[in-house]
Image 1 (cartoon, helix red, strand yellow):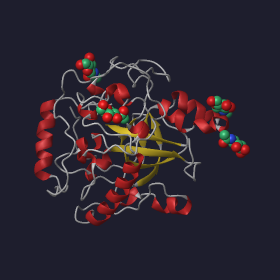
Image 2: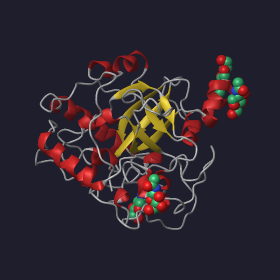
Image 3: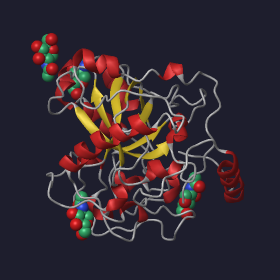
Image 4: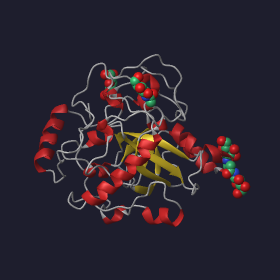
Length: 326
Ligand SMILES: *[C@@H]1O[C@H](CO)[C@@H](O)[C@H](O)[C@H]1NC(C)=O
Ligand SMILES: *[C@@H]1O[C@H](CO)[C@@H](O)[C@H](O)[C@H]1NC(C)=O
Ligand SMILES: *[C@@H]1O[C@H](CO)[C@@H](O)[C@H](O)[C@H]1NC(C)=O
Ligand SMILES: *[C@@H]1O[C@H](CO)[C@@H](O)[C@H](O)[C@H]1NC(C)=O
């Protein structure tokens, strides 16, 4: 949840960033980006018949063409960069309803843009929302900042640590919608760039095939803790499956689902690889750190691919400045 107050402050901040940011500018040959509004629209959500929420994804459609705005660019955020960090959990009640572990999916109910830094109502990506550490903002083009991460193609694939073979049932997809607090006074804060914060229902799904072997500490963290006791692997990826919006919100009236992104696994994997290769070539000129392709890596290769953020970030480094979207 973001707490930054005044829009005017944000406009000044954005102009400041545009003038002085060292971040890279975009070459003209790249496709345009998805349009993200600069101010909140009213109403801030649109949904169709509530229907049944999508919990574990939909059948993949590998044939639908994907709009150019979600395509590969000469340089982009670090797709396929692998992290190994803590799994923080949103406080019960932060998913719309005041209350419990089992927050109910109810489109249009307590459903506002101000629930996430991206200006995306929580119900739209229930329960797949993820908050990232502000460190990652330095990888966004200067004129976009947080907006780049809010676009519909930016997801995170998270894997529980026992799954070295990437078998079924031990990974989930998350949509970036928020920025983590970095304040240690908040028990759910992201202490390092490798930490992410997710909904506890989704965390429960991540361990669904291992429930009988979970410890008491694992179980109690899932129910009401601020952090899962064991670390997880995760990498930035192109969205598909349960990283897509709830079907009820898939309308062109919502900026965050416009234009529609088909559920296309092949596209996700192909563009991920292609974007990784472009980033390898483009990061030095953009002044960004090199990284290995950690997507779907196994065993020793996976261990070697983990991004060593300590080389580029220290505790106490100031967070990049950012403003909530919309
Ligand atoms: C979020 O927006 C809703 C609807 O405009 C408003 O009622 C609520 O108070 C806002 N919450 C915060 C934390 O600003
Ligand atoms: C639980 O642990 C036991 C003993 O290590 C193992 O045989 C079993 O396969 C595990 N169950 C699951 C669901 O992982
Ligand atoms: C954790 O919860 C699962 C059910 O979700 C149960 O099977 C398991 O025994 C619990 N672990 C402990 C140590 O109580
Ligand atoms: C979203 O809606 C569009 C237009 O109706 C449709 O083509 C697309 O398949 C839908 N996407 C998903 C993931 O449901």
